[in-house]
Image (cartoon, rainbow, N blue to C red; front, side):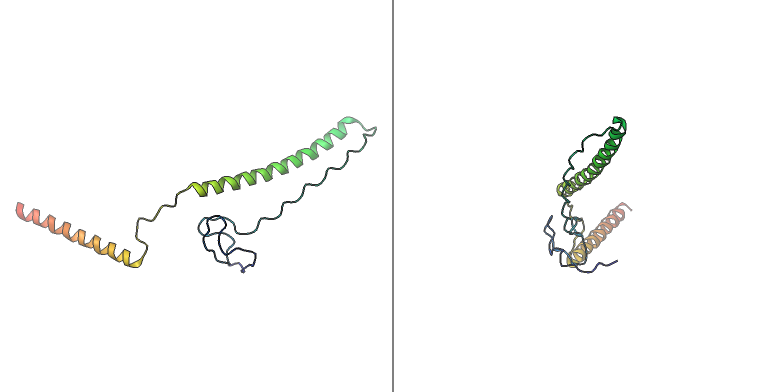
Length: 135
């Protein structure tokens, strides 16, 4: 699935500085998102509390308690997401990127293969020499 290029995506990753393609919404090196974060919605101003009427107290307490519980649950969900994102960013920053044990260029890989073949041939010749002297 390809994404259409977007003008609002940066040309380099804000986390690691790597050059990124315009067709992907995340960095291919550190996997951080390149989409701009949505502006946080301003908290609505609390309504002035109305004067208590002659209703029973238990009914008004249960309604306001359920509303405050749902609001606190929403805030807790947002906080958990923010904390998780921060923890992942710290983990990415602290992890070392290990260099591959194999050479990356074509010439270096060819040289490694030749060196391996030479070592194998010399080992085989050494084994044959030892076996020849023993017999």
